[in-house]
Image (tube, rainbow, N blue to C red; front, side):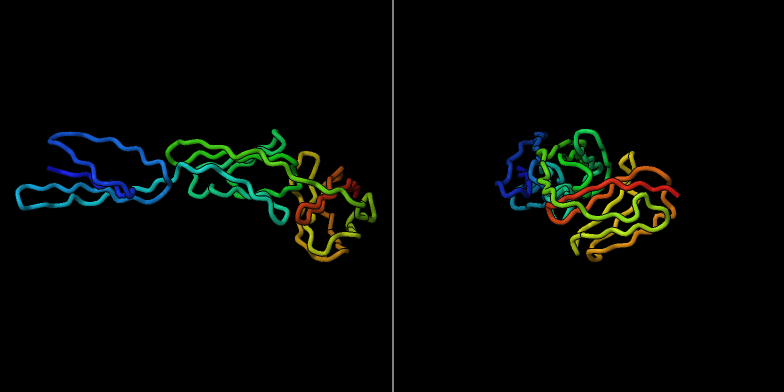
Length: 203
């Protein structure tokens, strides 16, 4: 007679001669199933298999310090962010909350299982605008009236990040020499506070 040990906390499964048994592990964990067989007074165990289950969790979005992070997304082969329903960012763990108000996160694990987080809305608090001088900027831009520990970002008209700086005081000087001529969005994020303005670069 034989018994199958699943390693999931349940009792052993008795098996008859040539009987097969299927079991679906749904809880993420590491398991070591093995077979124990007895003949007369002698029993022996088969080598234990090592089975790692990564599926079964739903991604959760955490908003903290100006970033939206996907938790429960570890060990996944593919992670996709959906921001404002339009932008897809693949294989990143977090995105700045200044690039959109609505987020969700999809992932596909190594077994091909898919899951999606709930859509999260980022609360924005609009306060008095910060100062930009000169605007249009040529080589140097001075930003005033910032929160001391905020994150400052500049994006082009396509939404591409061209500059990011983490809290360096209320006044900050940015070298715009390598910026192409055009219009940019400059945004400040601190916790759940968000402010933005328009920057023109003209060399």
